[in-house]
Every structure is written in C-alpha cells, then in structure tokens.
Image 1 (cartoon, rainbow, N blue to C red):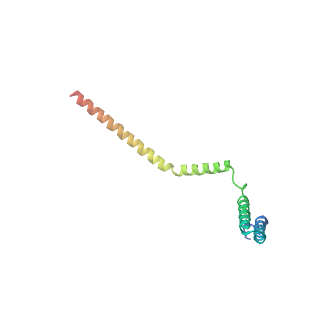
Image 2: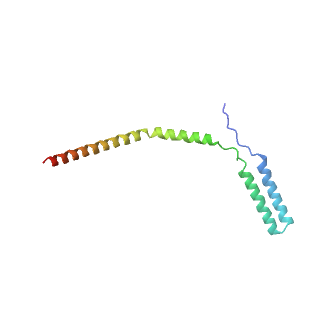
Image 3: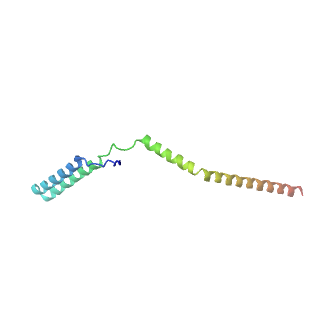
Length: 116
C-alpha cells in the first residue's frame, strides 16, 4: 500500500482576496475617473500583495533552531576537515623544526667564526 504525500491545498482567503480586488478594480474603472481608478487599483494590488506576502509570516524557524542548525553544519565541516588540519599541523611543525635546526647551525657557525 502506497501512501501519497498530502498535497498543498489552496486556502480560500487569497483566492477570495484576488477576486475581490479584481471586482473592486473593475467597479472603480466603471464608476470613477480613469486616473482615480488606476490609483484605487494600485492600492488594491498593493494591499493584496502585502497580504499574500504576510501569509506565512509566523511559519519560520526560531533563532535557536537556526543557530542549532548552523552549529551542526559547522561541526560536520570541522570533522570533515580534520585530516587537512592534521596535515597542516605536521607541515607547520616540520617547518618550525627546520627553522630551529637552521638557527642552531647558524648559531654554531657563528660561534666557530668567533673562536677563530
């Protein structure tokens, strides 16, 4: 038995809002002057757009949820790059050891020159 995911259903609010805006805009063009009717239509479209944009306003994750997700991604990336960090650490230690060896050789060579 296969279960299909629930399909998103259109809520009647936005559809009714669009219908009401179109009807009011048509009435404005029939009754009012063209310039005023355009202003009314623009105002209706603006209010309708704001309403549609604000529909999902409270359906977002909280700050704590977003930070927990970021921390999880940072930890995964940190663990993924552990080998590269270890390789870089070994190269750095080898570089420091080579520098120390060169400085001790230079120091001993300078001491030999001073003894002559």
